Length: 114
Length: 112
Image 1 (spheres, rainbow over the protein chains, first blue to last red):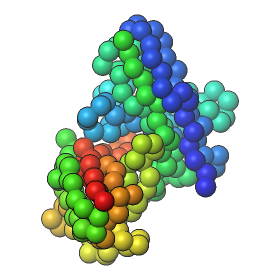
Image 2: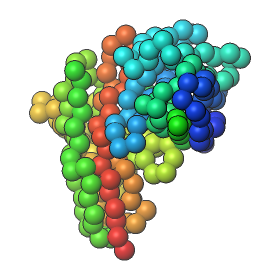
Image 3: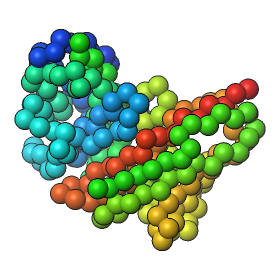
Image 4: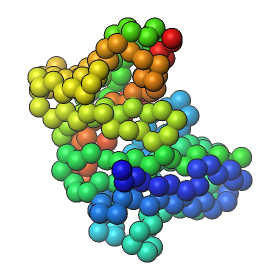
């Protein structure tokens, strides 16, 4: 069964460092998302991406965050200068088309900021 | 603010028991309600509910949506240890784009 692949599975970084989390969505999917889950809290929407641009972003997704699809297969989330509170599990998701469709999630990348 | 509330937040049962998980919501622009099962890795899709009163069933799991009272339940009958997981309820909303609003999740532990 097709799956969304995320790397790395776990990254530890120092506060202030840049981090790039990578995702390979399912190949025929067109809509891409990042969600995050701080330990013990809800899964929260960060950003949606379609046709090479951001469709919507949450309040969490400030100027420190960016997304891009550099090569038509990878979908990346960059955090420019990490803060302690960025420590979380980051989930990538994708779907074929918009319209009450089911999102398929990746296994997540756990980010620990020290 | 869109809100999804799950109850209980955790439950410990014995194999063979039946459990009912509750999810209530208050959102603008409701599209559908989804249930996911989260074990150690990716949340895996269980059900998507769009219409009220129509039960969806998959093996020992079933779910139903009440759009008038704004809630859904997920039932698991004859629980097994493999059902131990966090069950996530999420509502798909339509704003600038579609996005999921999640509840906190319900941790189910099934003991042998």
